[in-house]
Image (cartoon, rainbow, N blue to C red; front, top):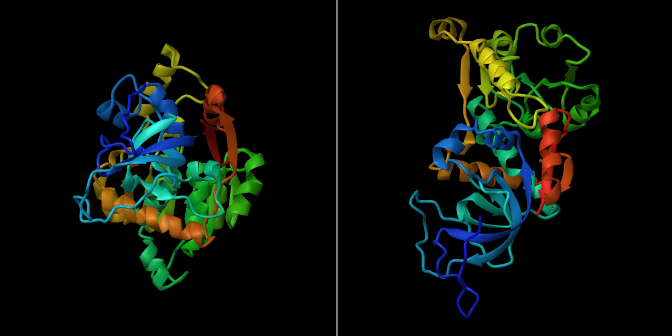
Length: 361
């Protein structure tokens, strides 16, 4: 989809809203959500955009144009937006539309790319790092809490189990957990080839569920259960994840990969039947049992956070500070070109990818 944009004699674009810029997009990342958008199964995409739709959340490139209209110092939420100029190298998030060469993006959703990080690496960071940090905040590990007493939380149990620890969100969760002083950090991977990657990211223990009994090994490491379990798997692990929480433990849910087809380009009637059967097996958490067991289940999806500008901005600023300080690094990157976008989708659907998949425009 294209839109004609008019420029004045000075190269400015008076039609740009004061809170937006035009981004010359050089790279975007591929998330599993993009596959579900393509299948028509992503709720926020259906609710806010409809069909047809351009997928994608992560962008990185240079500012092509800024608004030449006067603006106030603060936005509607009392937050001073970032100030950009033409030519600034930036990265950030869009609510869909990232699979594009040029995009109109709100400035609050962009930040300058920190020194030492390539455009490809920057494109792989926003969605997964924001997801990881918000997940940890739901778990009770707010960054400001840890800054005050590094590694010395008031909890008696700081253990965390992270499913898909070598994937996009998982690889960032492992690093952030290490920064926040959590431990032991137990990473779960689905393939032996991913074990070493998870260890290098900072896992204290790695469970290879292709060779080990996942929950038997998890109990061996933490017999009394885990303070936090991060689960984007869905039906295949949700109930067991809940069962292996410690008292006062929190299960954080941000995806349902196992509910969806694996390695399938398109949906057929058989896949729809399989998905329906999996939905019937989804666990239901009884509020009375949650109370007696002192456990919590919390879920979220960042694509519904359009009105949470202050929250997302603060998370993004904290991520940038960790990147600038060298505490947080970009996960490994598999790079594709735009004409090979189909191969990129097939790779992420296969479940064999490590780190992030990035496409050059």
